[in-house]
Image (cartoon, rainbow, N blue to C red; front, side, top):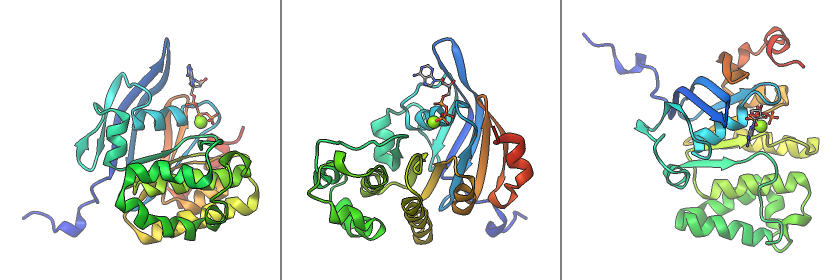
Length: 243
Ligand SMILES: Nc1ncnc2c1ncn2[C@@H]1O[C@H](COP(=O)(O)OP(=O)(O)OP(=O)(O)O)[C@@H](O)[C@H]1O
Ligand SMILES: [Mg+2]
């Protein structure tokens, strides 16, 4: 007799196996295994320079891998170009403020809407609800927004493309606490809605723990610890994350 379906583990949305990547001579990713279940938030943690951004870039197809595979919704995507991966539903908000400073907020949104089409327009009201400041600032140039507002715009813009996997690289880096709270609320509310998983690279551990379901800790190109986020104890943090 085969086991009843409810006892089977959920098929992962994203599955990374044995991923290796290098910059020139130096090996940056040394065989990474990572799974993102559907409708879940995965925190990716680690000290500076351990390879977190490189892993995200590799998942997006922006950094070539030397070995390993990346499967998404049961399909191997590691041979696809980054624009093809984006079209399949991978949304990426890079580290730093990735908006067009000389375009207005409206024009920044239009860039995504032109790619996303009708579905993007349907999502616009939701993005305004998550980040009201975007709607208030539509006619302003992106570059005059505060760092936190630019980050909200970058996340909002990525959401307009209706990603199934949203990849956020240090969304709270260098922004003020009140906006960090808004970004945390946005992650909770997106999660509640379902249909979306998030990989969150984050240095604020309280935020990372509160926002995520599972975690991975990297050190020098390898995953050294992973588990459920409630297992992110002071002891684990001191061992792997405190500088
Ligand atoms: N374009 C590049 N060329 C060569 N080496 C690079 C390049 N980008 C990053 N590296 C190196 O690769 C390693 C991993 O960098 P990466 O940016 O992935 O780390 P990170 O964990 O995201 O760090 P941070 O927490 O500072 O953002 C570092 O040693 C870094 O110096
Ligand atoms: Mg980084």
